[in-house]
Image (tube, rainbow, N blue to C red; front, top):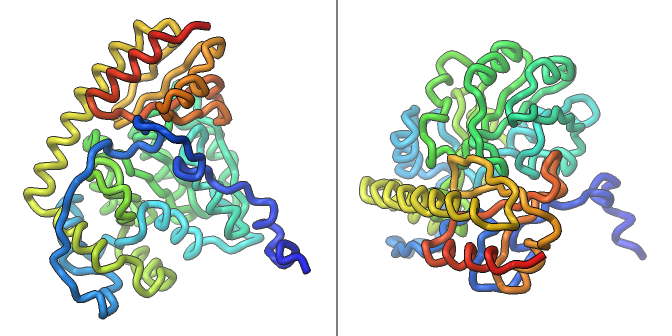
Length: 353
């Protein structure tokens, strides 16, 4: 008996998202997952794990709402921004009828989530400057229920033009929801569009504690939207999306002191990113370093140097982006500690083609 044959047809043909941990790689310098490179220690304050947690822990929600400058009833806690991506499809898209749309090169889970639920996805590649192609998006909107955009965009590191985003919101009003993935916005807060929620009932924003808050292993994210959207998502979310320890640590991270520590981490990452950008320009294997406002850099390398494989063999693990639209010979590099950045530069300068 073949269990494989019993699976849904779209799952049998699905190519799963290759997360950094799935890809693997053994080394001491892990610059492939956009994580914060050093541990943060939190002590659990509750031992009451014999009880189920609240579906939406009140104090954690209140603290994140204050941090994001929105109302608590506009916030839904979930298992990372990834669950937020799926919840939107689960609540709003009907298989065989609706479609989603996104603009590569960008985060790979939009397509995987759509395929998992049997939803058509359409793509409109970014313009050469990695901004939205508004005219082409408009031409493909028929039947599209959700549009996903990412700003700062992963893996390019740039901010999307707010004028274009507003045009997109205006043209989709009453027809399509716009989901703005702001997983990296803490590194560049002025890119956020949360203040637009009052004007656009179809705007949805995804956030996470995985990046600037240094809690990738916690798997805690937030969906921010108007109340009607949040109420619909509460219908399809699992009964207990966050465990008690997750809610406890998230609440601590969102305290005044936790936010102060996050600000210090962001400043440190920016300093190391500036160092990397400067030093990469002097590496013979580097063709171009793209500007970034986030905790990673996208770099175009000379393929003759075999950078990804050579550094992999040395235990320096980067993220190959060559299969992404328009990113041949490009590698994404997470900004690590000062020592990790210096080790990376030394290894790159030592390469010979």
